[in-house]
Image (cartoon, rainbow, N blue to C red; front, top):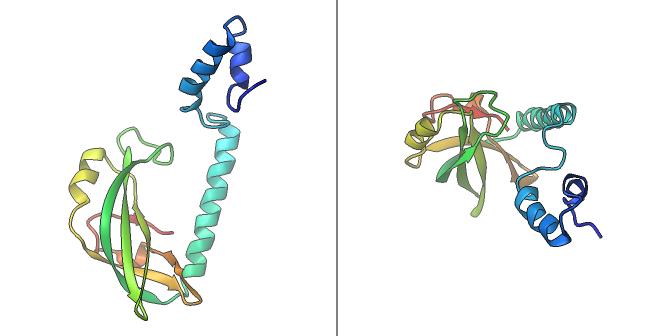
Length: 158
């Protein structure tokens, strides 16, 4: 019987007892994404993600605008999207706005930047301009063009 994520260990550790293979898979398997490092699949995945983001931005361009307030900041690793060894983190800003007495919210993401710079810039509670879907205000988009100069860093539209 094989467990999810342990199929590679049957070949890598054929002489090891089952318990050793299972322990190694729990340590190794937690850090290895499915098909991670397969350049061709990673390229396709990134292209599909970027295409979906651009589609959301085009749809949101006609939505109404509203002012939102940032609630909290979070520093997250930029992973392989940054394409740089120095720009290792990005800022995720959680925001909220009220519309017809109801609260709605979402997230805005910065461009990748060095960790130290991200720590220094993720402070305060500035306002930003958000677009929302009038038929479903839970669908929001933060566009870079709407927020130039409002935040101390550039954001990624989406």
